[in-house]
Length: 282
Length: 282
Picture 1 (tube, rainbow over the protein chains, first blue to last red):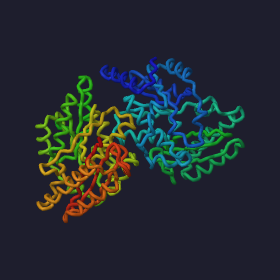
Picture 2 (picture 1 turned 30 degrees about the vertical axis):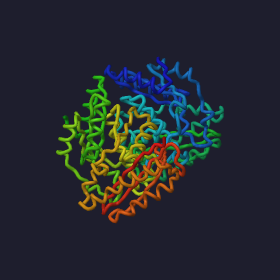
Picture 3 (picture 1 turned 180 degrees about the vertical axis):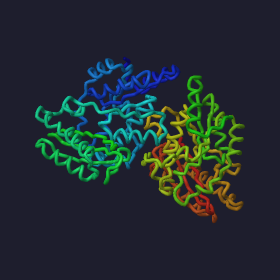
Picture 4 (picture 1 turned 90 degrees about the vertical axis):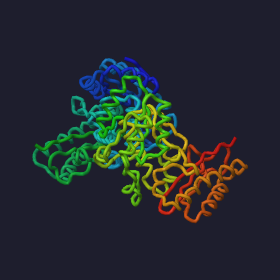
């Protein structure tokens, strides 16, 4: 697996690939890789001839006071995992390479980015949109893969790519989970053992919400109240939000008809965790 | 010359070109072509192997009450002129093709877009940035050419392309002028004969400003006052703004040292005209 750290290097490699007719899938990451990322690489191999990944802890998507400085970084470990999963190129640029100067350009999808996590992480999705736009312009993949755990991120990116006529297909892949249901996340590493146990409350809450919809619950507000009560039952957990929304538009669903996305953010100790479930009403 | 009206058609043609190694230049226009546009095509032929142009009157860059509906349209004439100038493909999409739904994505370069014309045309440069981002993603040129007459537009686009790591070089080409100095513009067609004569006041004012700098004027405010007085001497003209700014940052220059961009917008009758000059201080 090739490791490239410069924009020009990545572009040159991409130009070599252009004439082979090989289709390229791309998995952008912030490193600290886990099974969720590797599942994206494997899925990419099923959809394209070659998979590239990037590892870049993007400063512009961290709000002031968030965990940019202590975000876990281990490029050597990430490199090994990506190679084993079948990626053929790792793009691992420095901050200066991606941001030679602060961006004067603002990219936003306010109607999708302002609610849910966006309400609590000012500037987060603008930073995500910006770095993904940059990476897509550098790597120029046919397909880019994102995990469903970060659902709002994925729909923001999908809408941005469509609105900008980017020649890329955005693929949203199922959330990978630990055996007890906890969604795989680089931030799980922050959890102390008792917090790790308490963190199962997110998945448990989503299972409860799913069961409620299956049992006929059609009120978004009632669903949110049930979910909030479940989180409240876990002493180490503190709910930031839970919302029953339209999965595409991310707008609140007063009445659930076809489908509902139940999304939540929970602090477990000092660690903020998110998760969601898409429930189809048959 | 090929004429293509769909995004997919343009992408397919671009893919064919990708493997030839031929370099592509691109001239995006709103049609109603004049010598300024054709000079961009000819310049493109000097910089690349092939030049494509687009004709698309972009609704999102017109503020409410502006001239979107009456903007001159004559695709058959434009086609003939582009072919004669040496373009090999004309991309002429419908509004629905470029905006199948309203864009939820907002693209802005506020520090460059908010002043000068942007202060009087709310949303204009956001609309320009959006449509250019779309067109660049569809056409994927190596070089895109813009006229210096729309200087603010050109620097907004150049900054956006750099910030988004777009793999395109933005080339700003000199303003083409009529014999009496009036900058070529599709909107010159709106001028009645006596307005057409009065419109020379823009170029005359910029010549005066150039001479003043050459003669040692180093105060931006004094330069603006001289220019405003010159425009005030033309009864059919009404100054919207004149500004002495840094040509890259578009910020006001209290003191002129290396260079100055003098830009102005003037209403002549009901027609809004713009022009500018870049003066280097030797």
